[in-house]
Amino acid sequence: MFWADRIAGDIRNTRKPKDGKRFLIRDEKTLSGRVHVGSMRGVAIHGLVSEVLNEHGVGNEYRYELNDFDPFDAIPGYLDEEAYREHLGKPLYAVPPPPGSGCENYAEHFGEEFKAVHEKAGFRPTYYRATDLYREGKMDPYIKIALERKDDVRRILKDISGSQKDESWLPISVVCERCNKIMTTRAHDFNGDTVAYVCDRNPDGAKSCGHEGRVAPWGGAAKLFWKVDWAAKWAVQGVDIEGGGKDHSTKGGSRDVANHIARELFDIEPPY
Image (tube, rainbow, N blue to C red; front, side, top):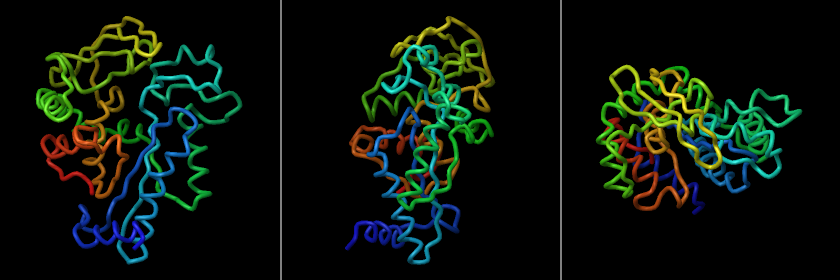
């Protein structure tokens, strides 16, 4: 039996769509540069499961996120290091595209490259951007839950993955109002409406500006950290099916943590 037939059969026999109508299949890729061919694995797995479900008359949508909100944390060797150094630490949507690109930003440029490969391989998911979810306010309810229950997030991280955070830690990154960087900030002190933050971190060559302030973390002003972000995206969209590589799926890994956060904080069942 073809592996996609087996997976699709298991879904048909054991699952019902969360919206009662059709299964939502989701995958995503952070557009940190030219995408490695290995990332086509997820595109193909989810795409083929969608195709087999279609063949059996099972309604589904294959949705693919072009992640443009993660930080620009490294300069690929094929780009001008001097020109891009100042952008380290910014969200990918705020980084300029390569010269002559014609695209709005860095993430869009490499997203268009990757989409062209999908099409050549015969996969045509519905695309959206991470910033769509944040700027439209769809993530705001889950940001609020995560901030209000930050102690539970800390406990889950410690119990499941062994990661320990101090008591002032919050599960979000704020976009600095002065330098527009996200990788250099530390958020603390949520008062129900705003969070305090300081731009003083300098990881991976990113330069902080030292700004301190308070900001309402809604509408794209801040982003949830990865494992909380993943669970929140399942909740926002009602995701039924989403796989992951071995690096994410090991015991104590990202998927294990996200599953616990989904169930405990957001009151949803994780995807298949």
